[in-house]
Image 1 (cartoon, rainbow, N blue to C red):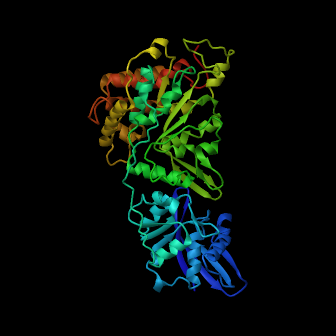
Image 2: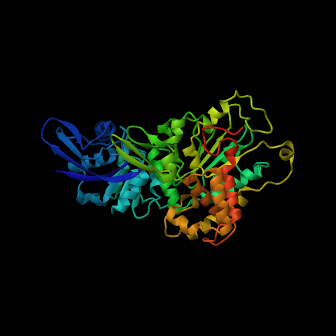
Image 3: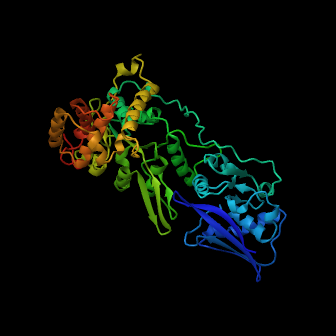
Amino acid sequence: MVATVYSAGVFGLEPYIVELQADILDGKAGVDIVGLPDAAVSESRQRVIAALKNAGFALPPKHVIINLAPADIRKEGAMYDLPMLTAFLISMGRLRESELALNVSRCVFIGELSLSGQVRRVNGVLPMVIKAAQSGFETIFVPAENALEAAVVEGINIYPVADVAEMLSILRGGSDAQPVANVGRLFMDDADDGLDFSQVSGLFAAKRALEIAAAGCHNVLMIGPPGTGKSMLAMRIPSILPKMTFEEAVETTAVYSVAGQLNEDNRLITVRPFRAPHHTISQAGLTGGSSIPRPGEISLANNGVLFLDELAEYDRRTLDVLRQPLESGHITIGRASGTATYPCKIMLVCATNPCPCGYYGSKGGKCTCAPGVPEKYISRISGPLLDRIDIHVDVPAVDFETLRSKRKEESSAEIRERVERARAVQAKRFEGTGITCNARMDSRTMDAACRLTPGAEKLLREMFDRTHMSARAYNRVLKVARTCADMTTDDPFSELTEEHIAEAVALHTREMKYWTPSDKGTGMVR
């Protein structure tokens, strides 16, 4: 008797339904698995046989064959243990349709088995449950540890199971277990990590720049001597970003699910991620990789902040792989096993010293680097990457009087309120376009959104010629100017004035004290 059971798989973030067929044939006793299984799937036969034995069942002394369809997609992971066991029992006649309370053909089974029959958590459950719901399945069995993650999805009954006996009891209608309640719309409060902008003394120009960056989701580079507060500012940026939407939370949670970085307490990631990889990270660690493509730091920071501290210490080739993802908002990883695409809609925040000793160009310290060393150090950051960073912030040393001042600094809550008002203006302007913020405007949208007054156009022309802007830098200045305007008006299509252009140009060209205007990244102005 051929038994058919359904499961699901995921490659990258792309889930798919898997049909398992099991049949018992005459011949030498054993189990064969076909359908492009990897080593973990092939090893399922031992786990399933042991789990069956310890659940009180025994395989007949015959040949069992299991087919995983579609056969042209490589199956990887231990998530097929539970559906294999179910297919075994049906083909053996130990689970009969007449005695079941649920229609197995409308069910999906996902889970790894221990030898004793316990059901263990697996990675990628969220995208697989979404696919099962979209495919019209009525019920899905998942490991109990994945319950909250799976319960995000509406439109499908989710049964978390701890062991084989519990799953069989539910199938036969002998259990009082109920589907887990949907928690998709229940957002948790923001995690209070104690980081607030009110704890940062002075640095008013830097705070203003970061507020504009948060309002438009612009990329930022902070440059200055050591100990001035660059990292301190960066770590507090999530506290002024708008709260995540439900769609953003699901997308980000799916990435973490595939990466295996959700724990039993997670239902949704509702706090914007903040990822800060060390400067020794590899290209694969930053963008994703391995033989089966896995998400890297840039995707784990999706809808949040990727902070690269000590930017000039990173390998230049590693940094340059960020160019295309920063433009497109996704990263495509090709391997022999296939091609996976992950989202990476991030706010890139970088910090660096201007030279190895850190004091080149500083008023509060003397540079001790040998001649030519600062130029070589700062040129590790390529011009094309700099062009993709909208805002450059000079972070000077804070004086003693400012540090000792009793002046009350503005809190993150106050700044976030202004940021959210600016995002509301952008939401009205981009309604129905799929664009969420100014930094992601395309050229067609910019034509309508970035109209200039005559004075603003004259100023922009002068600055374009004086600073030798590239076409990309020109577009980014316009986007930042649009954000500056959104912070002062409720009109989503107001004209950009000279003040908006002047602030945007200043925010994009402050690093000229370190790089030459004509050739960023190859020389410095003494």
